[in-house]
Amino acid sequence: MIDDYRLYLHHRWMEGCTNAAALTREIQQLGYRGDVNTVRRHLRPYRTGTVPTDAPLPHLTVRRVTDWIMRRPEHLTETDRKCLDELCERSPALATTTEYARRLAAMVRERRSEHLALDVWLADVRLDGQRELRTLAAGIRRDRTAVLAALTTTFTSGAVEGNVTRIKLLKRQMYGRANFDLLRRRILLSP
Image 1 (cartoon, helix red, strand yellow):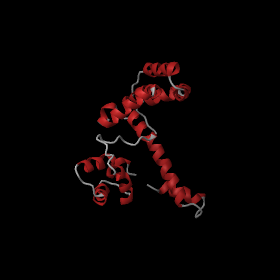
Image 2 (tube, rainbow, N blue to C red):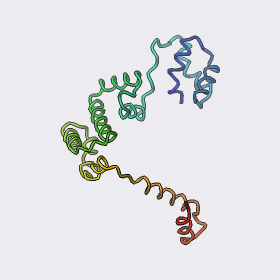
Image 3 (spheres, one colour):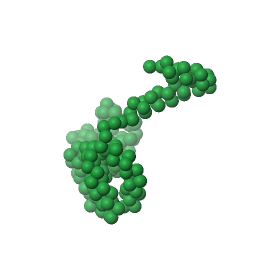
Image 4 (cartoon, rainbow, N blue to C red):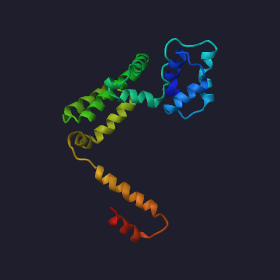
């Protein structure tokens, strides 16, 4: 829980605020939901004299690294960009995956209608992508017409999905209380 506030705590410690209770109150105003003991445990190395001179890097999780990869590079903070670059230097497989993921995300975001870009991406992944990427590419190849339709058309199934969600909600509300006729009537008469 404290990982998102490590950088803030480091800066406040370097400014001279060493009171764990006061620091806990400050980060609770920023959204921290933990207690003072967690903050004390985090600050224990600082108290023993092993204060890092540089700000601590964020705690790495799969979700955080995936967010760095999928976010537009210009929207990354300097720390996030630095961390991702270090990870890509250590792991060439991650660097390759990052490149392919960003290319695919750009196609989806920009809704590029040129089917050639998708074909080039699929061919590149087939030649030198990781096994997981090749599996994804094989699935895209199987549903190629649907993927191209999603990239080229402006139609969406959002309204249909909204109605399905509404009907499921009504069904759950009536579970065990009424028969099919009443459910049908509620679906047809509800706004």
